[in-house]
Image (cartoon, rainbow, N blue to C red):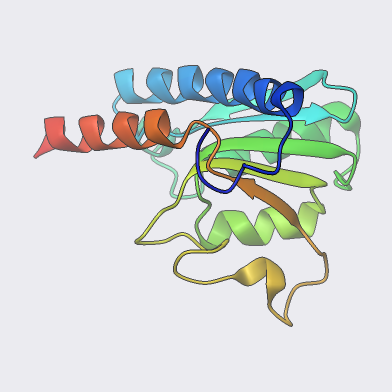
Amino acid sequence: MDKYITQLDEKSYLKHQQWMSRAIVLAQQAALAGDVPVGAVILDREGRLIAEASNRKERDQDPTAHAEILVLRRASQILKTWHLEACYLYVTLEPCPMCTGAIIQARIGLLVYGVDDPKTGTIRTVANLPDSSCSNHRLSVLSGIMESACREQLQTWFAQRR
């Protein structure tokens, strides 16, 4: 098992791994389209898929078209509410400041991400926005699910572009 998740039982780990695998597939779709490979899915607490998205910054020429922003928008439209406290968000890469702010504002019930982002990650790496005094929501976070696969996907994509 990856780091940070030793407290999970096998059944919980397999469930998280299943949804992170889907996020990795979405990230691959982004990579094939020329975008940074990040994928995201939102489920309800019963484990039903609500929405999914991948990065679209390059395709849409939109600096806000991160996978997390797009999936939050879709889930809110589908559920007809921006209050997503009964939802789980899976994303392959630790969210940036913009996405972390949107996740907190949406009141996501649980954020699960694959790999830390040493340059812009604001969940635990560069900053810890969820635990700061400016946050109006206490975000539960689980990191390190399929960390190696998420890291390898990103490193491979960036290596091919250098």
